[in-house]
Image (cartoon, rainbow, N blue to C red):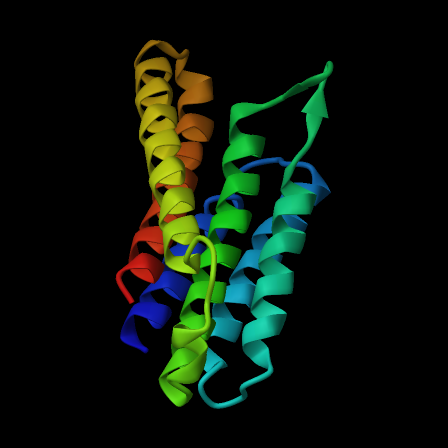
Length: 172
């Protein structure tokens, strides 16, 4: 429960980094959906249906985040979309673990690749991409003109907050 609250806090900090910038409406919608999804994770133990709602909100967040410019997907747009899909995988994993705790028969009859392997593959890929993106952003921040530095810091905060949220969800 505390890690869920931590993930909610990290996603809220990440969304708050948008406050100081002018971003398209779809980015605001994506961030809001992710915060609602994390809130659903926190409240899922009290209201069982919220887990599924959190998965849907996380995937919707990914859909709103993905945008193209001149036929290309911007690195931050891809990061937001991957974050939504990764969070959906982690919420699915946590719901699966809760469900498996209720009945041991589910684990005995499962076939194929375990959900945990898929979720942790998403997490690993997301964290590697986050690290690369942070490195690129820090390098660009050092050489950016003074006027662009504030936006760069906000984007660094956004990426860091999203990665921290994924790590906290993963630690559950």
